Length: 348
Ligand code: AHG
Ligand code: MN
Ligand code: MN
View 1 (cartoon, helix red, strand yellow):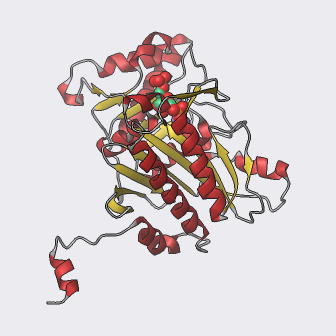
View 2: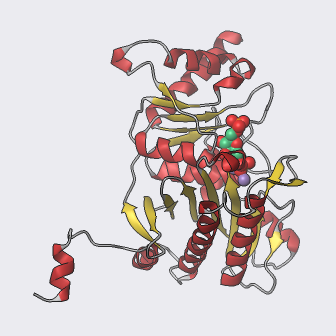
View 3: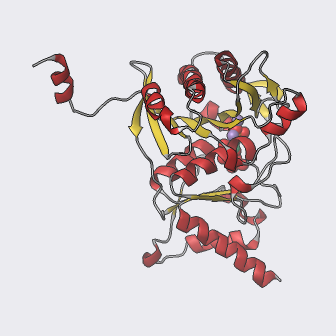
């Protein structure tokens, strides 16, 4: 019996690394020149470096706040700064990316001397308020191809503000009980779990499909009184008892978008960050939170809207603009849309 037979006998399951998977799937891209593959590998590398810091954040002086505020007026935490710097470094070094936009940067960053064709938008550290409590946090990325050939800053600035339906890739890293990288290039959704003993992301969740309906809803219930009437009625409806429709639903809310979306993707159900009197445009950012998550959820067979419009069809006006976000199992998202429409009709 030779060595390969031994491998085949040990559990049989083929171990596929993120790198191998990307290369094997490379042929799926219309412009399979390997550049997008290299870009995804660069992001995977940054994720491993960030993961190493996240795992020892409690031990080194990387917890806590820097004392500065970002452009959104939010406390900047040391891990935000670290994650932002590592991703910018990895994306700049790879050479595939000509422009980077980050939640942590007021304006877009032009990668000096790059002839790359890709634009990457990042939320380097999602769920910052949860860092010091050791609660799951994440990283989100969204990738576009540049549209113009012109090298001017104005042309590149226009190229950053593309609707989500033009993304060529999107994904997230969830730093939880294990660290996972989940991404799509428009050919389904695949999940990779980091094996720290070999420092590789291994394919663990091939071709993820979200259940058509779930039994979990995820929302910050504390803002109930700020929501529109239709949203209030929908959330009260979910809490009524009716076995035939699986109600009452359970409420699960981590307060880290990546964690709440990852659970919704795997278990089904609905995540909602609606508009409110407090946040008329909602809180989540369209370009580097809502769009990438909407692309992933749709590719897994789910639905993502702002309550009225498909997220991926929203024409962006500014880099850091916010949008209400409702995503998850198709039947659940369609149901809340009916409540919102009904409430509008009766209000007229
Ligand atoms: P970030 O840490 O990147 O600013 O994102 C935080 C977001 C998102 O992760 C989460 O869904 C939402 O904030 C939670 O907001 P509330 O605390 O208002 O519920
Ligand atoms: Mn975020
Ligand atoms: Mn963030």
